[in-house]
Every structure is written in structure tokens, then in C-alpha cells.
Length: 226
Image (tube, rainbow, N blue to C red; front, side, top):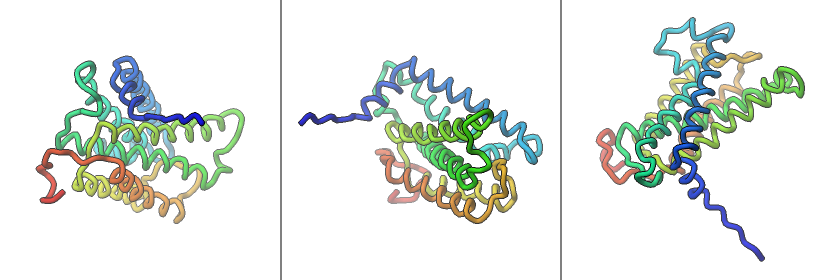
């Protein structure tokens, strides 16, 4: 019998540790960020123009996720040709950046898939605009989750960072549903979507808790024992 082993870490190390591939990923994220911002600029009935600037990250969920992961991946640029990606240095700001990037990607990558499939009759199709409005959006947002899974390879987290991430996600949920600034949909969000959103907030943080290693260094913002 022939056994085949798949060393995911080796491929992640190669892809993120080489300038051409890492640069390509950063450019792709930047382009996707601009597409996402364009969507929210032209959204109806609420758009970015209707909100104060500092609330943009809470309203434009997917662009926020892309901005966070782009910043996270950019921290690897100084390491190219100097050290392994898996040995990337860590400090308190990086711990929070990597943690937030991971949970935002996981939550809003999956949220989009859930939201479109709660009422597929509003989106699903195989011709014209539906090819992007459903299949394109679903596939690109599933790639959010794939991209999130590489972050624990070089990033670390702490209990305090996980708690902060959960608080931020839940604050975003309050902004979306209690204040009515959820991403534009072709239907009114009801209890099923709200419950799914809350579960995704908790699930994304639980996944980070499971997948991330803890840093060797003491986190000065964390309470004793974390």
C-alpha cells in the first residue's frame, strides 16, 4: 500500500516565505479590498457615505477582514530570505493583529455563505449576474477561511487577545442588528441569521483558541497566568 502524507506546513512555508508568492497574495488581497469597498460605497439603502469614518470597519465587514489579513501578512515581508515564516517574531501588537485577522476572516467568510443560503432564491442562479452574485461571492468568501488557516502557522494568540476579539465581534453584531447596519441583503434578516451570526462570532474565537499557539514571551496586557 502506498501512503501519501501531506505536509501543509511545508507548503505554507514555501508560499509565504517567497517574495513572488507572498507579494501576489498581498496584491490579490488589496484588489479584493477595493472591490469590497466599492460594494459598500454603492450599497443601498445604507452606504459608507451615511456613516462616520470611524464606523466604516464595523459596517464594511469583509473589507475589514481583508485589511486585517493584509496587515498581518505584511509583517512577514521583513523576514523574506532571513528566517523561517514559522519562526516569525511575536509581540503584543502582533498577537492582537493576527488574532483579529483570523477571527474576522473566519466569521465573515462563513457569514456570507450562510446569509446567501438562508434565502437562496434571492441569489442562486447559473447565468448572468447570478454567476457572480451567488457563485462568485460564495467562492471568494470561502477563500477567506482558507487564508485564515495560514495565520496560526506564523501567528500567536493569548487569552486576553481572544477575549478582546470576541468582544469586538459581538460589538459588531450589536452594530449590525441592534442598530440596523448589517451588510446589505436582498431580504430582511430575521432571527435565524442573527443567531447564526452570534454562533459564528463564538465559533471563530473558539477556532482561534484551538489552532493558535501561545507566545513564549509574556503578554504585558494579559492578566497573570494567560
